[in-house]
Length: 269
Image (tube, rainbow, N blue to C red):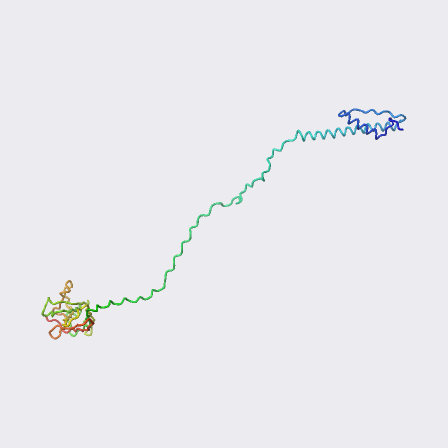
């Protein structure tokens, strides 16, 4: 059986480690190793080596522990709290979506375009039929015809032309003769022997007795135009006579009656 004093190198190292742990922080404690009987050189060297190994191990262990402790102390006691504010969604973009320098001036209201003026209607108007002449009164007659001259004018042959229809003979009744119709044509030129002019007198009441018809050219221009109802021929005017009497015409029905007049005498007085 092996003596307890004759321990192997491994056992000695295990024992040294155990003592070191048991001693705690006594880093300089030296564990006595009993002398080995008969061991004259090798054992001492081994023990010295073991001692050195234990010292190195202890120093390494203490240094490592101190370093670890120091690191822990730095982490636990010397750490500076992080005061950086938490990221709440990233730094806001200072640049607006529209971009720096974008023109944000609102567009001015644009006035609506005026409605285009309609094109003028160039369609020609259809010809309008003239209004028909008013129908004559079916209860009256109309005297119409052509005036010519066979006598030569003595005062130039130019003037107003008059036609009158009487109910009575003006040569007998004078100013009291009733006029039933009259007409006047202004500025008639009868200097030419073939000149003629048409006339018409309407609204004559039909009757069985004849009407007296007079016509004359105011060749000398002496008729008072302010009193046409009293107009009558005088010296130098051209007149129409049937011999020495006033011509007559019968209008017994409400019809148009044609009656021509010839200026055949120049008044001598």
